[in-house]
Length: 110
Image (tube, rainbow, N blue to C red; front, side):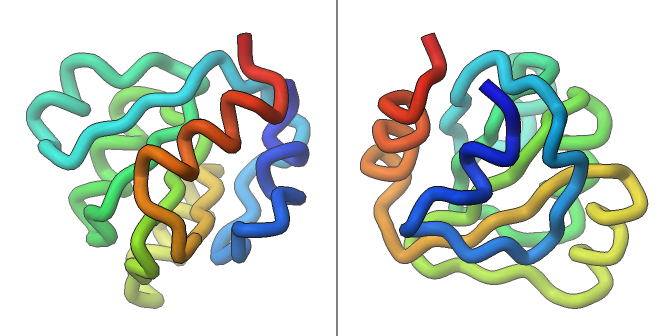
């Protein structure tokens, strides 16, 4: 599945585009940065409620393709700019973490 598929999901608002043609490997859900740093798979979509500059740093370190901020969480402009520089897409949704991860999975990640 390509990142563009996730960016087109009706429940998502794109805050930073990243690389729409990037291949997505899996969905990863975690709100502890230390766990995400050691376990987020390269090319994954990370669904979390942590919307800060450290989230972008961990996504960059783990080669995460996309951060989806659940529960209506947003991210400040500086962090979004950094995500854009790193080629990391950032999306926002009002859905809970589980519901958003399930929608991404149902969109075609196997």
